Image 1: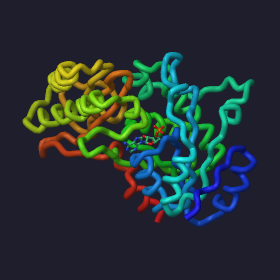
Image 2 (image 1 turned 90 degrees about the vertical axis):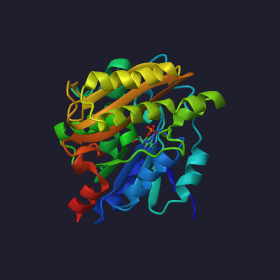
Image 3 (image 1 turned 180 degrees about the vertical axis):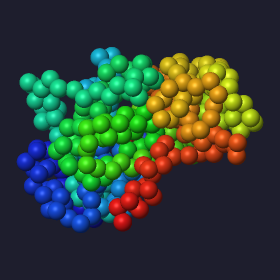
Image 4 (image 1 turned 45 degrees about the vertical axis):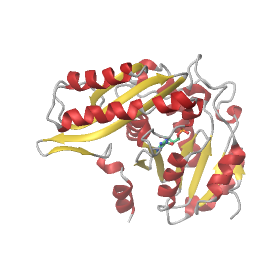
Length: 307
Ligand code: AMP
């Protein structure tokens, strides 16, 4: 196979997408910041089962804080294209430059209050606003029928979902499951920042999540106790913790008793890498089980709605 064409301007994008907008199957959009790994590729593969896929690769400046890793963020378009070439159904890659997405006179942002305010909203001010702004701009340019996001960034999924509902974007969202390394570490472009010793320690996020889940499985229902268990594990292994939280999935609000669809969410620094991870669980009298973030955003739900 040959690598997918790379489009950089709005004109090129429109020309390439025009026939896809008219097609029977929906145009599927997978937005990324590049440095693709198996997590991204799983979303592309999922999307390709629903329709022709457009992948965007754009390191979005507005979602990085002033002291964050925008300049250091890994960029390797050639490598990304080699990976995408191996997946059937990738029609094109949209890789605009910053001036295309943010002309110099641009002053508009899209901000989701409520679900965008706690957790990442608190610890990375402006980050989610940068995400919703670029995603809205990309949705308007690409006009997809389906867009695919990873549950690894659970709050991002929830914020984009809120935006799609509130602004009536005519598309369906699929949230794909988190792809992990063999030892459980969630795949992330930021794992590259870890040296050998830090890489081993980085599994503490998933181990803390498992500890929280185990407590729930053993019948613990006090959210503060579950949070303290996760926090304790993270701290003991030298992670610098932003949050280790148990929240309602609906709006990410705190709860006293853990019940219903809940998110165990962690953000912590290992070395210089700030990592996030989460488990989404359904907790009720029947026990504790892994659950999708939202039932109507699973691949299966969207595939069946499109039939
Ligand atoms: P990023 O390039 O980090 O902006 O991520 C692009 C998309 O890939 C987002 O929807 C992420 O949630 C998703 N993603 C990142 N890591 C993973 C992973 N380990 N498993 C599944 N999806 C992921």
